[in-house]
Length: 397
Image (cartoon, rainbow, N blue to C red; front, side):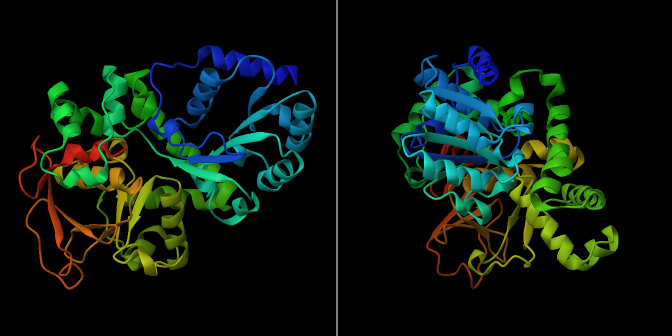
């Protein structure tokens, strides 16, 4: 235990507090059991340590541990929790739970056996904290964290405190928040840098190594997380990488399963499963024309990389204004909204709002009855009628 406390206090000393993710204000920290999932590199560990540093004293009442620590090779999580409670512990923070075999079962036991203990745990986006084995953890309040929004990037990079713009305010012509933003900053001056290398919170650490770190992160997801959490065979990793390379070279990608099978040597069900895994890992984002009818073995209608930084990392030759605009739009909206696409190429948000990414609105049976129709434009600062600046969607969270 002393070993774990020493590591915990050492990490607290080194965690910065100058910028805290907006999700920290959304989490119900008073809940008994909290789960936070997200892809590699989005800041789950920093989020926990910042909360601990701001809200707890170094008095033994709280403890942070990472479950990939070598200490757990000879010790059980339930034993740690029991000893921690006996010695006066009240709040246990568990990082990387997916690295610990049988984590959901033991968390359930801890929840049942120690009613006065608060537990916060993080895991890979592949753990699916709202499905499958995680459902065994009764009473958990689950949250998902993704990379920096454009707003968070500006606040971190420039030391600002720009506010969130609620989704409903996107459609109002005169909004105080929008006026406040434009009085303090010119968003278009910084949008290009964010789209290239501002999505992951470590962008400012060693800028020259940013894309190397992104590639290493994706490789770790493919080579370690997917075999562990989705039972992908080692022989299948090559096929996964080949599939990702094909997608990255032609996004937005419209899957043709027969042609993909010819190019990769994978069968139909394997390809569709791999597309699902890459989506769950937050490497790609699958869109469907009717999300209510999606089944596990249904191919997506259109595929994007998860964020614009991955375009520059994996397919710099495929970067263009349309690709950047649509990838950014889908990424920022998907945080809290349902995103579908129409047969004519527009995006449908929450089954109500129709957004055309450039060009003109087309008429089709699926969108004919939607009255809320708008254009997304990437080179304007102010809204005019139905034309909404692209940068505004980066302030939704």
